[in-house]
Amino acid sequence: MSKLVNRASGRVAVLLAAAANFALGATGAAAAAAAQPQAAPQALCDLLLQVMKQGPTLGFAGRVKALEPGLSRDFDLPLTTRLVVGPPWRSMTPDEQQQLVTAFSDYSVAVYASRFKEYSGERFVVDPATDKLASGDVVVHTKLLPKSGDPVQLDYLVRSEADGWRIIDVLLNGTISEMAQRRSEFSSALRDGGAKALTELLRQKTAQLAN
Image 1 (tube, rainbow, N blue to C red):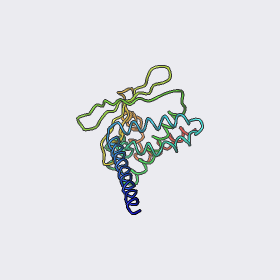
Image 2: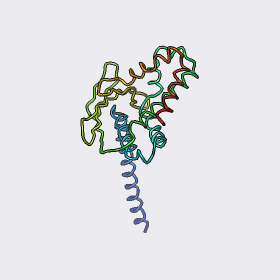
Image 3: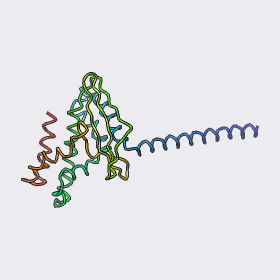
Image 4: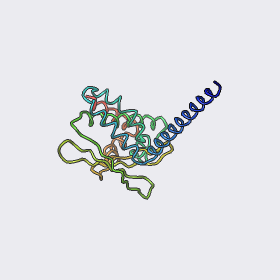
């Protein structure tokens, strides 16, 4: 009897060890995938497609709620806010900076919720080939393929950070920097009224997108 018990225990131990090795292998594979520059754009594309398919049912507020965690994960919104603001950022108080980060983040999520609101057979393709810049940042190429019509090229500038690759800019049609557009769009408010004026402008724009 003791021999049978020992044999059974041995088989259980082997199975547990195999399961543990499999789990470690899966974890390692997931970590390796997350370490690739394409990870954040791929996660974003998957999220957008999911939200688009539920878009009308979710409504604007529901899309915002569904998008916010993923956009905060995939984008470095605090860094993007600082880059959009430019040199005036250094003269702002910590409270002004935080209010701007919050307002800009809310606005960014609202923009995506308004753009990707329904599904008509679209799909995203993320190119495995990337372009590494001299700065160390990487351009990840993606395309939004409509059911009919021309594809839309959306390239993502990603930066390696302590917790993985994060998106810091979107290049519309592969060339037009969304960050540069935002900087130009917000420059007059920032110049005329400083952080307070820009924060208020961002809140107004967010509210307009919700209507």
